[in-house]
Length: 263
Image (cartoon, rainbow, N blue to C red):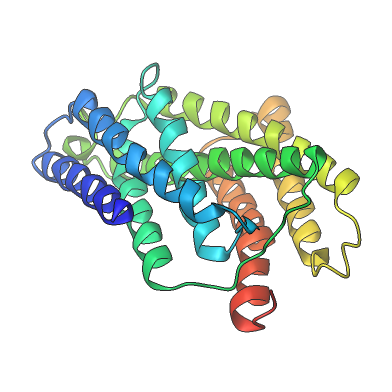
């Protein structure tokens, strides 16, 4: 029931936002933040009830997806109080609603754990924050790419008054990438320290894709600092790093839990 309520609130907020954007009218950020805040409450309770069970942590594919979108909504919602990121909810809210509905309808095998130590809990938390921040950065990159395309085509009416200036968008983008990269570094580092028997746990490909993602983001940030990388090249690097990062977790969960049906 809570999942349905949260999905309804998210979709209602998204419909309001899309209608305003379709009219080329600026969206009131306060309405968006209010809608997201109201949706986050039942979403959080639902996630807690389905993941933290008497049998242990249930870290199944769809449940973790719902948890990550909860973290994303919280991070963007709080960030909107200081920075103009509310337009990202045009992407985030429908995806959040889909993740909630799918987690309700399709149940996957779950990973039960009663013996997670503090190191593993820290690794999981760092990973969630890293995934969430870099997901937000990827959405911001797509929005920036759209904005640049519209400006180059001289379709100024599509972006002026709706999106912040390109310089502001780009600054926000690299702030998100830097934050996500820091948490990703901590996540990869803690994973090498606290995850034992990587091969036996079917986690070797997870580590490979995580490191690949880390390398892509590191090269991007170095290129940005020393060579001034921006625009299309930066967007391509961010999306490439994001794809590798998602394959590291969701790819492995999809193969292990759904395709191979390994619990």
